[in-house]
Length: 197
Image (cartoon, rainbow, N blue to C red):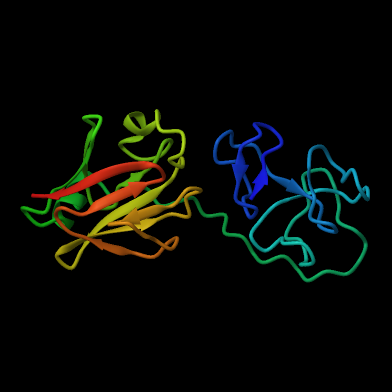
């Protein structure tokens, strides 16, 4: 874990942006020290935006805006997709995907009930339920996604900062887990009961 230099929140050391304040995470590609501004305070190396592949000792992916990398030879950066994210499916498409009787509702002890459609993203900043979840600071802006496939509901954590659990079992990021009626789903520190009608 590293500390966001903007809001002082502890975040995973492979974060490109702070999940709490959305500030970019900059690191020194030479010594791995997080920093603000354009240069490392330890060795004056230009800072770059942190990525999973930018652990200390590995070649950096891209320089911070307005800076250049050291003149040392490095491997070319992997190509990044510039295509926009696909829009969520339309309501009609969702209704075709979810068979009758396959309605999933998440129930929270505080009286929050979230009816989920296939393809719904859930989080504090994204998805149809962002307004209801905005009060929960440990839930990520883009926490997880639900799908109805092959006659069953599945949930996949989208690499959230504080993770997801189904019935007490921690989920690996981007790995689908089946849901059934009566299961519990923990989003960060908030527990929901799964009801499938």
